[in-house]
Length: 448
Ligand code: PMP
Image 1 (cartoon, rainbow, N blue to C red):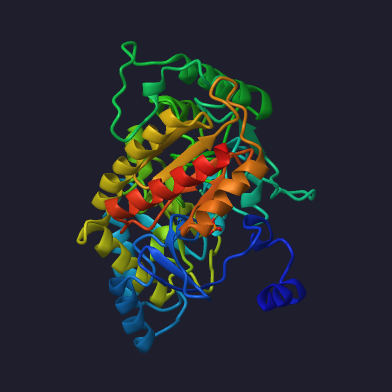
Image 2: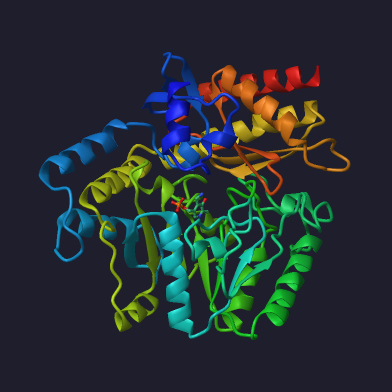
């Protein structure tokens, strides 16, 4: 009560706490996949501070690395050489294929996308940028122009030259339902479509061509895609779509940007990067969130050619490459690879998807279960035939009920109709069983 009073009086009004829970949760402490509130109640965290605590709250390995660095040096800026930054850039670049080897460090995902936009425009000499409906690429004045979900866009001039194309959503998009369901790039489901190309993919590609022909000067600077859409509701695209879309963009002189802010760092499993499942190599990849387990940091990686365009003007940010962030980031990569947390993401994620698919067959209001690794979405509908979104009040009731039973979920989707499950990558199958049991109980209560 007291905290809400202070919040109302001294914090800006558009914070999520006002809209997320009817009765806000006050968190005091976290350890690995668990959070504790002020009363000592424990929650299984299935949202990780919006998919950000990648390897676990206060992960001992990351904490130790950050603490060690904290006692040695906090800040220098990029004016000076310092080893945490160089070690980090080398380690990060090793996770990418050629030619993605040049790193810029930023403070957030929005700033990484701002920089990617700048690079795309400088490198190509073109101006127009294409993004998907339902995309979330940030909230800064530039990146918000790329964002096409929720009510983030204020009525002021922003996003000049940014154009929206249809998101190839095979469940509730305009060509949803007309596809071969197995053609979606899935964790363990193989495409059984003999033609190798399903109807939805072709329709959405035609639509992209139309966007390019009608809303741009036939040239394009860049195309941003989250390899799996996060805030938009964990939307996966038809197999082969992204590869052909990249080809189309490159033919028009543009560069292709994979926004891995949410899907990167093992969130979708052992591949580490979600773009790999699409059989593409982007020209630029942006990252943040899970990069340093919650320490504010972001990054852009690209080819030397594209990175070099910034030498025409100075690019500077005060905090980018902060030593503590870099030390934490290095420890995250170690935990992913050496402690096999990216592998765990694949194993527990697949287990969870199977459990959720069972619930889907039991409950009429679960329309779709999708995702990869521990980036999972459950689309809630009025019924399976119409696929109309479950009304927000009903979503909220289930959401709140899960919280009361000790499970924190996320919400997403263009209509707020998708539950998002994105726990820290250290969760176990036993945690998945607990989450499935709580979710089932909340759905049963909703049925009554
Ligand atoms: N891109 C994606 C895919 C995101 O999910 C987000 C954050 N939700 C951003 C960019 C923006 O990141 P930040 O909030 O760190 O600016």
